[in-house]
Length: 84
Image 1 (cartoon, rainbow, N blue to C red):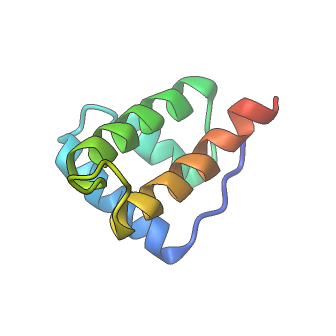
Image 2 (image 1 turned 90 degrees about the horizontal axis):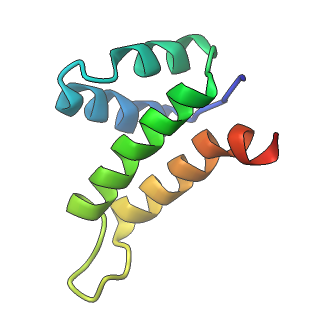
């Protein structure tokens, strides 16, 4: 499954990869190569969701600007799994 990302989305994924400390290295490697499996998509969605919960919401539980970026990234990464 090929997923096209913007430079900003790639930047966010690189930051998440550093914070992930190698736990999902295969999924991060595969998205860079455009070789995503359902398992890779699930792993990255989990990492993005965790980041959203920690850094992407305001005290009112609405998404902040970074949270909106994470939501958009989640939509793009998850799209092949949902549409298949």
